[in-house]
Image 1 (tube, rainbow, N blue to C red):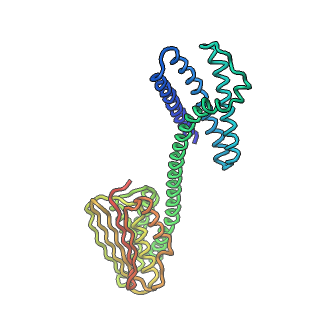
Image 2: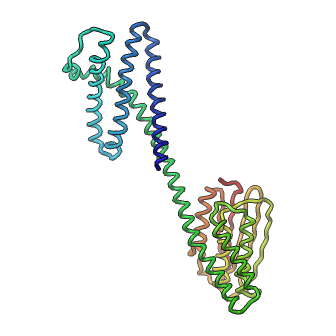
Length: 353
């Protein structure tokens, strides 16, 4: 935050130096076209005096009146103090020119303070309007810069908020994988199965993937598929061949990447809401295809209870959020139910940020 403030202050100083110097040089160039000789020198002095008060007025109006009155919507006070400050600064500007600047190049009688403060028309056309012209341009640019900064800050905050939400969803999801696989290994250990050690190794691979690669933004599709194989192997231990039928088809022709746990979550849902909820035979079909243009993942499973709703879990909601965050519309996410078959298809672009 401190570094950001220093950067903003430095940017503001550079802008003000460039803007006010450019404005002064523009006024000098315009005067040079109309006058020369001694008259030109006088105009340079007058322009310099007006220029100083333009800088003071613009910064006072923006950083004091606008920030403390206009932004909090105290409009009546803002208008009152704006008019009062313009009148006061214009009068002080004229006093400065008459009593400080003019004695260096003229010996004409000086206007009295009373005449300076009471000649409103002269103040308005020769001092207030020149001050307002530079101030208006300055404030307009400052508002544009502030709007740009606020928009960038809002975008950054939304991005950070989305990242935190996704991390939170992943942290909710990970223990569910652990719970399922530990139950499988527990069943194997009770029966003294020879597959216990293999299952522990597969569980270790799953945990390693979740704890390390699962926290990355992108992982290769091939890595996700290897973990899916481990997960299917662990889940399959709970069911006989007659109880569970699994068909897999892969066509990996391009080394595309995806957000971690994207496909694995759908596989978990297929087991949870298919074989886990039905006593009848469950079929799960998985198809994966990658090419230079896109990655395609399809999964379908049969289920016995037609009232079962996959959306009740956090899995599908997590997938939708991840797709929206990572692909910004460059994806297709289709869910369908027909004849007690639940299917999901995800098509994602191979190009990503």
